[in-house]
Image 1 (cartoon, rainbow, N blue to C red):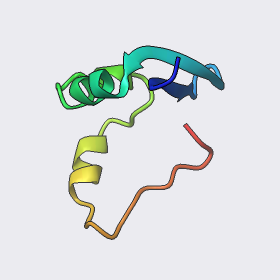
Image 2: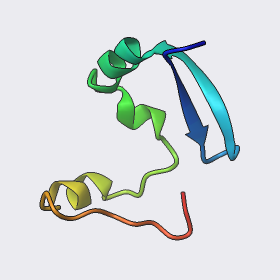
Image 3: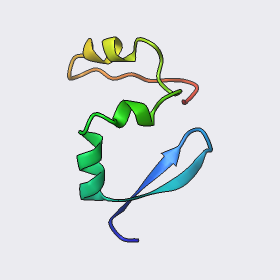
Image 4: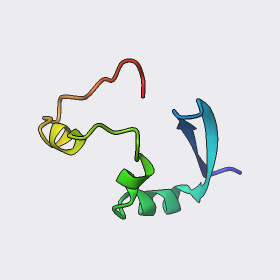
Length: 65
């Protein structure tokens, strides 16, 4: 469906239809539920690590999550 968000799921290594429009996805992504979506994929101190990043830094994970 045009405008629908599609997500590459690292657990299945496949593309998954989110069944959300971009507007719905954006609303959901800032609702506070995003960390639950990634349960099992994030490391224990990810919040602290991300909070410590400057705007010109990023995190690379190899092998890919």
